[in-house]
Image (cartoon, rainbow, N blue to C red; front, top):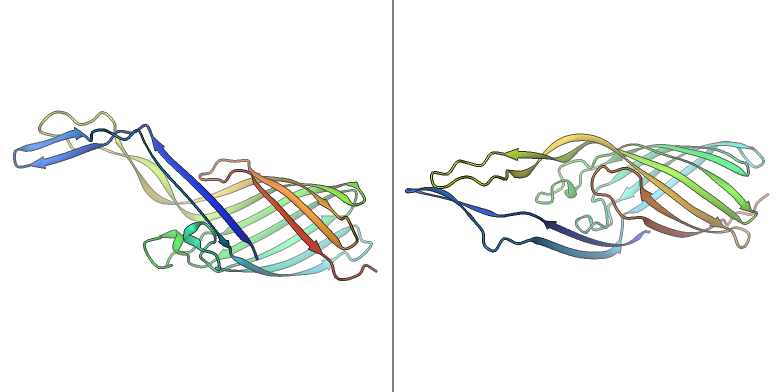
Length: 247
C-alpha cells in the first residue's frame, strides 16, 4: 500500500496582459496596469496512493539454474486522490514477462504492457469519460554482487503513452483595432492533439541482506529525456521478507 507525499510549485513570468475593448465608437487595446511580472501557485498533498495487487509465476529456471523466465499480472485499484496527484483515478492492468541470468554480474529485462480505464484527470471538469493512456513498458539493467550480502543495481526504465492528448504551442492573430495598433506580441494558447511518446528514466541503488530472508533496498530514479512535465529525482526505499526457507 503506497503512501505518497506530493509538493508542486508553478510560476509564470515575463508576460504582458492586454485588454481589448470594442464599442460603437471603435475598438482599442490597453495594457492592464500594472501588469503582473509573475504569477505563482504552490500546493501539497499526502495520503494513500493507488493500491496494486499482483501475481507472478516462474516458468523456467529453478534453484541452481543460471537463466530464468517468469510472467506476471498486476491489477491497480484507483484508491488514491487523482485530483491531488496521489493516484491515477483509473483501474489498470499490467501483464509482463521477466528474463534474467544469475551470475555475479546478472543482467535482467522486463517487458510489459499497461492497460488503463477512464480517469477524470484526463478532463477534470467532467466525470471520468476519457481513457488514461497506456502502452508498452520496458526495464533493463544489471545487478552486481559487491559482497555476499550487498548488491549494486542499475536500470533504464521506459514507459510508452499511446494517443495522449498533448498541448502544442500555437499562435492566434489579434484583431486589428480601429484606434491605435495591436500589440506586437502574439497570443499563445494551448491546443490538444493526440500524441504518442515514451518517458525514459535511470535508476541506481543498493540491495542489502543483513540476515537470512530479509532484504533492505533503496534507489534513486531520475529522468533522462525531456517529454514534458517530469519529476525531480525520486528516492525509494523498501523492506522485503521471504517466509519460505531455501532448500
